[in-house]
Length: 330
Length: 178
Image (tube, rainbow over all chains, first blue to last red; front, side):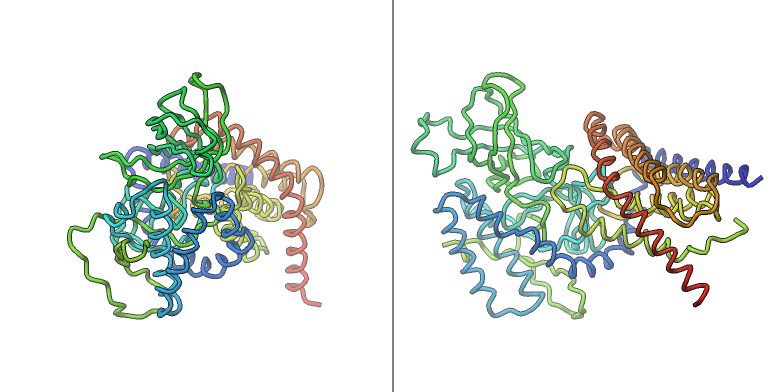
């Protein structure tokens, strides 16, 4: 008899699940339901992330990674100089708010300025919203999504690009009221149009063939946070470890041009074969994301800076308007 | 479910903290496959409540946990995928616990093996269902992931089972008094 009852329970629950799966895959009803989940869970995740983040970031050594990444001294010096300026600029601010501002400034200066020949002015076309990473997707099979604590109330919409101080992070796939889900560039369904550039330190030794030193291609996620795969349009293009990969930014792309995406680690396969794959390490350390910026729009008009009307202890990330890059970049 | 499991509170607390730990810490470790701590904890709890609540206890626990994972934001897979898989997994593990009779000590090679095998099966199911309904993970990579998840489970299962049985013993002592 208890055997019978337990089977009934099992049957009931699995039927429920299957109905949910079918309903969601037919009508995308899940997004609506999940937005309720977001309302409940986002504050909890935000509060806990504030405690856990410093520990995770310290243990995983985000700074060390960046130094190693910027092997050539020029880029490193430039970054340090910008970082110092950013510190000065944020000197007058305090607490949580200062951290957010500093984050935005930092990626404005370092991300776009140190990029692969990226003109600083390009960054100034975008208005961005600062957000904090509050959670990573917990299901084993799909780990390349994160939750951030800014949503449609702050102007975040699905499809917008997300960057941090080091480079491209991903794009928004679902936006809720005060939180959003971001698909990382390492997700195995993520595809980004890219441009490959010889790194400055290697250029003198490598035989120069103008003007083919900027190869176009696509970067696909592998599902691993530390690795992307790049396929170049020209199968004979010369690629060496250390080459830089940045976004192509075509007209209909969600991603802006010249945002750093990564550095070539190794090349698998022979030149000229279609199976040749270039392995790239993401510029942004995807496993230790903290502050990110959502590129909200090209500013037609200067949006008024939001004043903190109700200063709550939990930091609602006010849309921080992008300071014009020219103020930051030297 | 006439006879209630004495461990309801413990189980809920364990699953919730495993879920938080996983989405805040484990998921950002730079491994190819995130260790599925939540699943291992759910299965350990299904073993724990199996003798009193029966296999349906594990099924309900799995369903609720899976639904929690499905419903909370960073996950974008079709609603119900994890609910279904966790429900089946909880049931099968609970069934084994129910037939072997009352035992509070969860350590033992057979139990570890069962949990590990079930973790592999769930990862496999995730690969199949996500490639069907999510249009995301391709099947080949899903199979690799399933193997990786099983290896993680080999590492995690003995630890989690030992921890859960220790906690259960402790809470039992506390309930009964000195």
